[in-house]
Image (cartoon, rainbow over all chains, first blue to last red; front, top):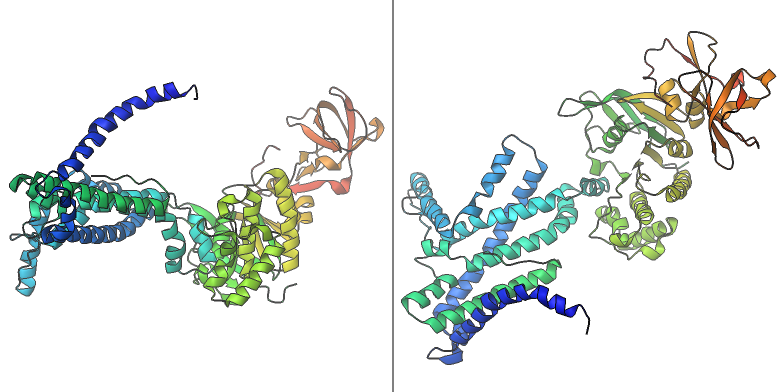
Length: 272
Length: 340
């Protein structure tokens, strides 16, 4: 045995205590609680057999996927634009774009209601233009809008960090070899941004999977998984069901992050 | 000479940046087909800006025009100019292998796979990098990277090869080796080339003609021999080598200079002036002496004499009249005197 082991053990002890107390013990209890309901361990199966659970899981996955893709596309374009262009008010604009990072989900939900709710701006304009009042704040479209809104800043910050490291001579070399602007984007810029894009996609996806505040404010017509868990826990007092759904949600998100991590080769941490 | 080589003509090209600084004063330059031109000057002299204008990476100010052969290229984008470019930072694509880097321009030009393969093998052999074809870029040394960059630039058979300080990032011994390889390569290909450097020995070794630049202007254009032995002003004389001011004033309208290697150490009776040795730098093949002859600036003399010079000795110096560099002092365009 290496003489360093006792010292290493002492060094790792604080981390081990925190990890055990706040992760392993509660998670293990949660796993067991999931199996203590009237249906026993089949509660974990309920995500597939209970149509309400399954529907809510599928809705959450679709929502998170589409939010991730749209946020990454928008943020990449905006992030690169901000890195490459100097203009008056640029710094203020960047700090405003990162504004939503400070908002709790409920405020984001409130903002969506203000623009797409019954008294919202979008409804007002659409009524004036088409005679139809568009109200989608309480549907999946409203959730989508809110999620994209809070996802964009995280992705923009990552893209800007990666974009600043892009060497201008790489693009110049590609152009000198005859590459069109689109070929430069496809062959040079996207590959250079790829690790950052995968990392921020993963964070974006995990955040959307677990987002609660916005869903709580908006989800009257639709149940995303965190809302289902909340409902089972508080209204139906189905503690075992809530626990098993939590574990499944955690596993699915972890799986997505794991795939992203193995694709990018760099570490990706879940957030939110 | 390469029959497809392109001639270049620039008329009235200038560059003023957005912040108002004029990096390049309006200038004209003609490069003959197949010629290697070296733009030489200190940093900030405008040589890189000029190269970037020729490449199409920067636009010339209103009124400037660029011709490849007789064709006006002023408003043609860089990707349509069919040039090859080599950068100081190599600028190899990190997401592609060596082979993928080299064939990138050929894929863009939609060559047939067979032709691409053939050109790739040709380039790998020419640059002696066959063994590296499947390596990743981060597995290469600086010298290997620059070979790949050269292969990539030449692979597309460009009308014009532009090299922006390609050797500056390499260490000294590698720089010398790659310099002679580039020199051979340029002669063999007969491609019109424009090479930017601040290193006079690189310029001397590679150029058919050197364009000496300072403060956004062309100061002198000439063969390496002309630039070295017949510099137009003191700036050029100092920039392409060491130069001493002769202690004798032969004519008040002229400044008389000579190069350290042109001074002869002679018997006292044959000397033009006497000087005391301040320090001796023995370099093996020659000795560099720093002399004091009562002037505010020391005089440097290189000698191959097999004599053990010592500090404090007094020696006599003679410079053959045809080896003197005479510059008109009334010429106001000559750049500020620089300490040699």
